[in-house]
Image (tube, rainbow, N blue to C red; front, side, top):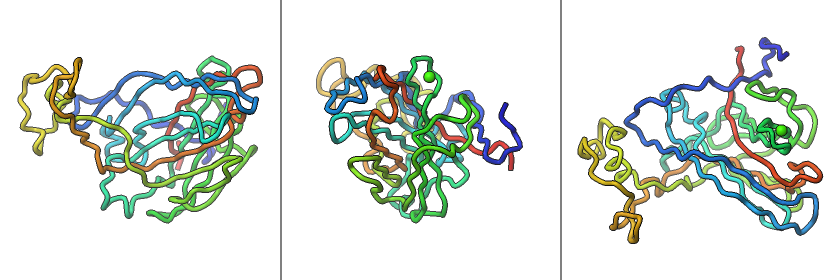
Length: 273
Ligand SMILES: [Ca+2]
């Protein structure tokens, strides 16, 4: 059993029921799965796409944007047989905030990979940060087998380790590459129309609070059906987040003979101070 007094044991923050918030929120259930034959150079990776996004989804993460997981992306990398894992946190970060905002130094950011089909992680990539603001040092441990599976984590002591400054591309194109820092939030949402469809979610202050209390739209804006006509507006245009992006050979994540993996990400903090 994990020792809860071990300062390296980190437990994800408990799940909090999504409030009936009047805040930007969007959730589309799904999971990211990547299927392909791994360990063979030149193999084509087939991706089954899932979509999911959360921004400021609970009061706790709204108060702690560095822990607020926004999106997780998995897609084929820059060369055959390579794969990219990416997560974003801390959106919305304005351009002004981006000049000073850094990752949490008490937060463990993890990619977890299941390569046996049981939805339990077999491989983890653990990302931690030291320093403040835009001049932090990022450390990636793994990919490696986790010491514990499930909600309790401990920093692994085996496997690759990469370290360097944030906001810089680290590593090599043939091995593992890493970028951690400010990036434009790739999530797109026409938030005004979203609140017209679901007005109980609208904010209590600001221009969007003036949207009628009863639904005044049934579909997002767009030129062709099933969209409602008009021009969609990307509410997050020009808004940033903090991104952790790792590209590596897919064979570092898969199990021989099974190229199918499931990927998710977590943020967590020490359970004891
Ligand atoms: Ca597994």
